[in-house]
Structures are given as structure tokens and as C-alpha cells.
Amino acid sequence: MRYHSTNQPSLQVSLKEAILRSLPADNGLYMPNEIKPLGDDFWDEWRDLSLEEMGFRVASAFFGEDVPEEELRSIVNGTLGFDVPLIQLAPADFLLELFHGPTLAFKDFGARFMARLMAYLTREDQRELTVLVATSGDTGGAVASAFHHVPHTRVVILFPKGKVSPLQEKQLTALGGNITALEIDGTFDDCQRMVKSAFLDRALSEQLNLTSANSINLARLVPQSFYYFHSSRILPVGVEPVFVVPSGNFGNLTAGLLATKLGLRVKKFIAATNRNDVVPQYLATGQYQPRPSVATISNAMDVGAPSNFARMLALFGDDAKAMSAMMSGYAFDDDQTRAAIREVQSLYQYQIDPHAAVAWLAAKKWRAANPGNATIVLGTAHPAKFLEVMESELGRNCVDIPERLSCLANQPSHAIPMSSQELPFHEWLKQFSC
Image (cartoon, rainbow, N blue to C red; front, side, top):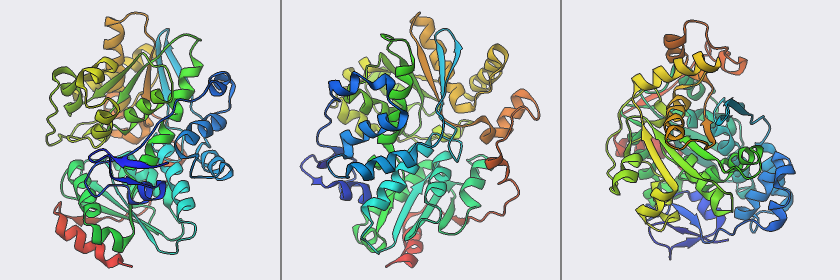
């Protein structure tokens, strides 16, 4: 299959180029030339397939022409080694727990798949691969875990100083080895800008054999579409879900849109954001106005210029009305988010992290206006990763901390402080030149 840039459709590349180079030279994003709906043979049996088999069928629609079946099955099976339970809170109120992977966040789906696909694509290449990733919280931890000790691979993670939770920071900074963390004096948007700038310096990108693990990379999005299929089939036959997605860089919601292109029937997508509400504003007004992000307690959503908006536009043919027909957007502040954490605990004795709390508020608002709709909130991270917020609302020792997270608390960590300027970052990277 060929892949093209959202900025210049005539710019076409192979799968290997799209995944390993991550970002086109024109600063667009790669998209497949064609997305064919899954056939009747899939839909006749999709509800009875194992999660691994369903994931393989979905991945084949994107990568089956380029990756042999045995290899692709191995990649998918190695990705899906944990549960994905759908929790029913009330008759039409569901939450999909995506945080049972190694780093307790939904990013494990994309990071684990990407690491395995890149290993296949570079199997005959002895050059060291440099993986750059900007994180607002969970991406860095998932990528660090997925690529830790992977041969011929180094990972450089950029995170905004003081804007990730303490345990999230530990996941970025405590592994060592081939994982290096850079503490950037700025916002996530600065980190993302710095990563993109390195790719757009084509000489530097080639010297370092750069690739990205952010959701600008298509390999991150395809495995995230698996759980849209999985949760939809658990609902009664004939029920089309409303997916409510806590959104920052909008990779997760874009993965859901890709699922609909394969034929998954979805009633609506709800983009749930905090005060960084660029996309809800676009859906309401038709005007896209990115702006500097502001810090909130739902830090993984603190994005003022979401990269995947370009893919969203492409999927709707740059038609704001078409996008608004399929998507709605709601935004909530920290006080509302804190109240939602308390309310969900009171109503259901269920602990919900700050990101899912924003989405739960959006689902509640949608159901009030659309009685009878079944909403599925994507629970993107374990509440233990946001211990300070959870304990401030629900009291000390309110959350059981999984061992794979608690063991990091006393681990030594190391991060290199750095400004948000691009040129010093490029100079620092040059130490790894091949």
C-alpha cells in the first residue's frame, strides 16, 4: 500500500518510509491512499472472534499488503497481552478500561504495536534507530516500556517540566539504559514543536535515523482502533455506541474515525476536553484557532495545537459540517473535573481518573439531551497515576496502586534539563550521529 501526505497527496511513500520517517517533508501527516471497508466475512463473525484475531483482521486492512500474515499475527498477539474490560456503571453508561497494560495507560496499545512493527521493518538494517517522542504524560511511559532494551534503538523523550504527575515522570525517567528523558522548560506544545523540527531538518533526520513514537506516526493509531471494535460488539446487537473520548492530541479519536472507515457503525463521537478546547470550538464555529496550551489536572489533554486535527480534516474532506455531523465537543474546567471524580465515587463506588472524569461529564451531558443513547467513555489511564488529585478528592489511600507502578516510587530517576529552543536541541541530538 502507498501512503500520502495530508498536505500534498501527490507525495507518496511506502509503508516503511511512512512508519520509520514518521513525518513528511512538507510537515503534513501520512495517510493510507485507500481504506477499504472490511468484508462480509469479517462482519458475519466479528462478535465471536478473539481479540487477537479481530485485531489481526483490522491491522491487515492497513498493513496486510506489506507485512506477511505470520509476522503481522505475531505483532498483534504481542501487543494484546492484557484485558480490555467494558464496565457498566448504569443502564446506558459504560466505561472501557484501557489501562491494564504494562504502563497502566491506553498508550500501551500503540507503543507495543509500534515497537514490534518497527523491529520487523528494520530487521535487515544495522543502523541504530533514534525514536523521538514528546509526551504530556502517558505516551512517554508507554514508549519507554515498549522500547526498553530493544537492540539498535535509542529513545529520547521530551516532557514539559512540572506538568506531568510524579508517577508519570518516574515512568519516563527511571528506566535508564537506552531511554533518555529531556525535561523541557515549556509546555507539551513546545515539546511537540521541537520533535517536529528535528524531523523537518532532513539532514539531521537522516544522520540520526530518526523516527517518531507520537501519534503523528500512523503505527500508533491502527492498534488503537482495535478497542472500538471490541467494545462495540459487547453491546446488544443493533445498539450503536456514542464514544466519548478524552482528547488532547486527538490520536485516540482519529483511531475511532479510522474504525468507521472500515465499516464500524458508530452513532457519534464526543470530543471531551479540558480548558484546551480548540476542537470543540471548531465543531461549534467552523473556525480552527490553535493557541498555547494551559495546565490542568487532566494533563495528558493539555494540548493547544493537536497534531491529528490534520488527519481528522482529511477524513472529512476538509468539510466542517460533515465533521460536526459525526462529532460533538464539550469542555470542562478543573473544578468540574474534581466534582465528577467525587460524583462517580458516590454514585457507583468507582474511581475515575481526571481524564476519564472529563469524558464522563461529556457523556452525562450528551445523554441528558439524547435519552436512550449508550455512551462508552474511554478510560485512558489508571487513577493511581494521578494520586495527588485522587487523594485530594477522595481521601488518603483511596486508590490501590498496582505493583508495577508502586515499585517505581523509590527508583532513582534522571532527566536532562533543556530549554524549549530548537537549535540547542538539534545540537544535543548530534552527539548520536551515525
